[in-house]
Image (cartoon, rainbow, N blue to C red):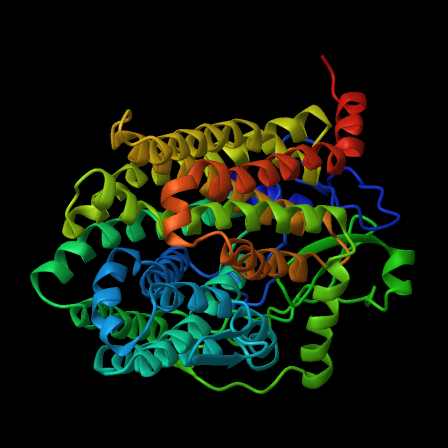
Length: 552
């Protein structure tokens, strides 16, 4: 990952040979380019050989692959069971379990990925402050590696329990535990990726991370329906158990502890501070002193011995200084992040997008089998279009998004502003809107439309959803510089809660089949349009700054 140009740029950055950024208060603006037009590596790596930023490229690649692996199989467990719902409905019907209660096997785990408390019929679930909102503080206090390994073991154990369950209640309990453990995909894993990457790389890496989830998830949802039709529904869990065990071994042998107490760095008259969430900010000396950030810290730690590979496999670490204060402070920072209009918009945008996706996944099986004569084994084929959609979204939001941000930064003399990221949402938003309309019209009038309307509507929507997820979370972290890390986690985690509430009363199966255009998706579409238009208000000041700063 390191080239001669990168090394020269870092040296120039460290020794003050770049233009000074006037920072009187945190604004979210970052100088991505130096005076010579070279890309800066922010945060600046220290001379500590154990700094995660100083890992060799192969170790970083292994960590990224491992993060993607864990996220893929754990999210398939939670969200890939849609094609199996008809089988479970028939299985539990003799026990008096309604179709809605069976659907809860897929919706409740998604809810507790953030946190949950639900009650439905005979089954009561109590999981307060679990998932990502619990896992995140634990990982900051005790370390990313031990908490991630704990999540791996929880996924493994709960998957065995789900496969061996003989009652609906036992099955639901195991599904809830799977959802809790899967919260790591939206808390620890993004932090690990941030710990080992530079700011100019994160768009591409997070694009690959989120895009890979949807791509591989599509493969599983296609094959799962055939697997269950040819064998039984337990094979779904046994297959993913194998992947969970492999993922646990990968985490143990590849992913070291990446939590790193990065000292504030005095560079070119400014103080660069990296918080516990891996987010770097630039402060003036006066503001750093006001906030209690040391201004005389030295970045030189060359005397620290480099840990051997076997030493990096340590499982338990000393808790962070002031562990209780740090853990409780994390919740306070997440609450304070909701005072930012940018964070509120990002939460609403991702929640509505996810709510539409949930509504589609819980209805396309019924529509295709009931109105178009598809077999239950073939329902998963509706996800074939997600292959190109995921690849294109990774390219669009990752590679092209980074290029767009650098282009806009060059127009301002090297300054990157958070609102630049919103420019890449225009095209995907239009594509998603078209996809929703096609899907709803086809579902409303199957006698005059082809099943390709369902396939293409779902495909177009997924492209926009993936891009929106990548862009909105990135934007929220940058647009709330007071506490960017909590803002990122809040957006990623809270979307599950809000989307769960939105779709709860919208998914009555007969109503969706007979009046899907008027009830199930027009609500989502209208509120999604409101959220998209509100981005203009969120971005108004930034847009005016862009017009005044840019040159023709």
